[in-house]
Length: 260
Ligand code: MF3
Ligand code: CO
Ligand code: CO
Image (cartoon, rainbow, N blue to C red; front, side, top):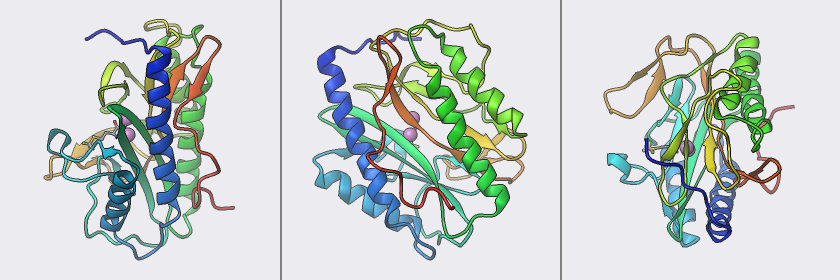
């Protein structure tokens, strides 16, 4: 695997800006979600918002991916392609946004409720949100890489859910995907030591049933092999001298992200 790049203070400023824009785009997208809209409308919003902020949607044309955002509904694990699908009351949807600003990449995603979720869907989504937070909580120069996956796996499996193995977090910077791969399963105390200046995503995909995935004929959409629900949250994280900084943190709680 290629070496892990450590970001300089100047690089980190660029990453802060790219990640802030990605997070802001997701916050604004959250506000337009409603029953009866299509995933294509989400794509149009993300595309136009990104261009209006002097950035580029990283997914558009990436290895042939045709759209400016990934929209993954219900049993879709990740890489759902926006299109004619109409969102229904009770759906859950992950929206994954990656912005390129001044040559630097910011990557963030969250799962949202469309209308009122079932108690089972809500349990999965809230547990997945907690899994990302558990992963973030261990990131510091005191930790090793697999500590992240170990924390996520313990929480997900403790709640009776499974952790997707086929897709992983990744280093990020001037490239969409860099070293290291960040697994969402692991054993505490294993893997490389984390160092200040590393930047990577943590993006656990958690399934209601079995962890195995299947790819649809469009060659992108990853669905659960058993057709049960899957949820995902993602942040881009900087390792600091004392812990970490969530570069894609939201300015305010996301609209439509939690039902009370
Ligand atoms: N944003 C995704 C990630 O978190 C990658 C999407 S690649 C695409 O790594 F081509 F499917 F858009
Ligand atoms: Co990512
Ligand atoms: Co992403």
